[in-house]
Length: 188
View (cartoon, rainbow, N blue to C red):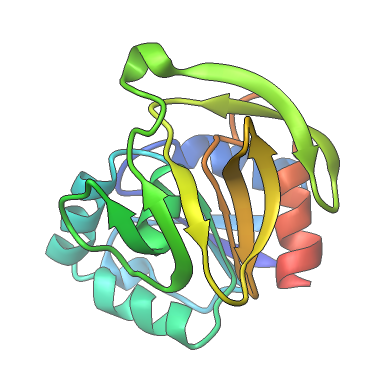
């Protein structure tokens, strides 16, 4: 059985766990260093990226998770998770893992009032409902990164090997297509 850890220090981790449970995956919360255990994949949910990074460091989770990512652990980063994985973040405060060859912009669609829903084509899946909440987007992609979805010419989903990021929240709503893609195509 596939086993996926979900970072549970802030953000919409419960919703990711619910989606994974519905797909028959063993999902577990990672709240502190002792929760880090063998896993087939990791989900870094939405939340506030600066706060999440500080919590990861304060809880001694940052370095062990970074080493696992560098060793090739598949990861799904949504919204703030995208920012933590981005090699470069414009207008940012605290550096994250920086393991994915992308440049991202924080709060690119504005504050809470800039939140919106859309449906767009996602390579390998088809049309996917997307919920954006104070969302970032990918300004540019580097070598080895595939663009998977765009809205109005802005990259909102991308993949580099075992790293999958979305600017939107696939855990909000009933659709499980992005989680299925992560399990079946990214983790394999």
